[in-house]
Image (tube, rainbow, N blue to C red; front, side):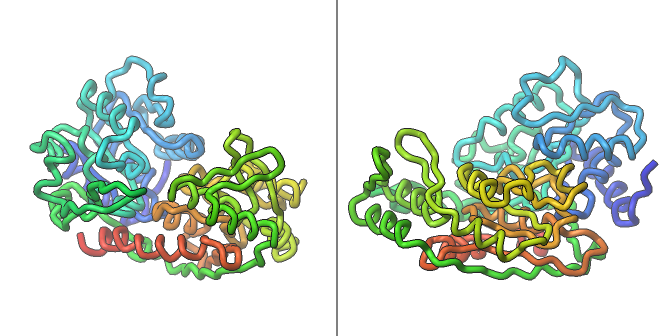
Length: 406
């Protein structure tokens, strides 16, 4: 039987009052503060028969272990969001939505958000939402996280656009020559409406004293990569043998440059290729004999890492924890529900545009008793990675404001 920390017991008590009174609860608890255990503790107090936990595939095994620790008697089913169509025909009394921010797309709801809404409409359960980064890039991201819950604070609005009438400063921006509406400037009123349903808790409140130190490492961009990038910028098309690299729009140009500066590319034919291993070779030299966690963005980057690290690299978390090998994880799939506490450092081979990726992936090593974490970013000299990094840093205020202004 698990023994909850004092703050978790307090959140369980307070959360139980909120969910019984309002039907749902949002636990906005920073990573490593124990969102999963806390949510299961609340579910247990509701005396349910059937509890459904929706999460990411990589997190399923650890969540099942937490359920065993709780020692509850209710029927517990944990599954990844993509497999919702496989759910048994059971009346769910409590539904826990892990990484709720993954349903935050706007102005149109994502398939995930629509699937969850349909399931909640059918079952009418108590709902617990979990996230360490509730609104990573815009307060507008809150709407579709809760729009499927009956009685949510925005339920009077027919859709996101009517919600924007009261809660979003809509502006216009030009993309690829077209003017489109920008709905990202959400007002503070969005969070104010959610305040009665939210319990926020930070690592600092939980007693974490660890610091995360970030350092940017820079490698020279090889001449053949620079030439390809210059050609793409100038001609919007480049060739590697018989393969074509097309960048006929601003978005495609950005994507291709993003790939190329880290040494890989996906051609128009759909084939991916490693064009340069400078970054991988640098990592192998810089961290030789050191157990590190590596986050990559593009699939071909993993191939570059494997070809350089050979038998010293794994993609399996259990093998990483029980060996001296380094681990390579794709940024989006590895940023949530994974602990890299056994890594000495985390290294980002490339960078994602998402503030969610920034916040969650960099915090994979954090534990209560670890005082210092070191995160490295590997950028190409005169590449675009440093510009993306600065953009992501500016986005992170939405998460900070959520924790400290609610």
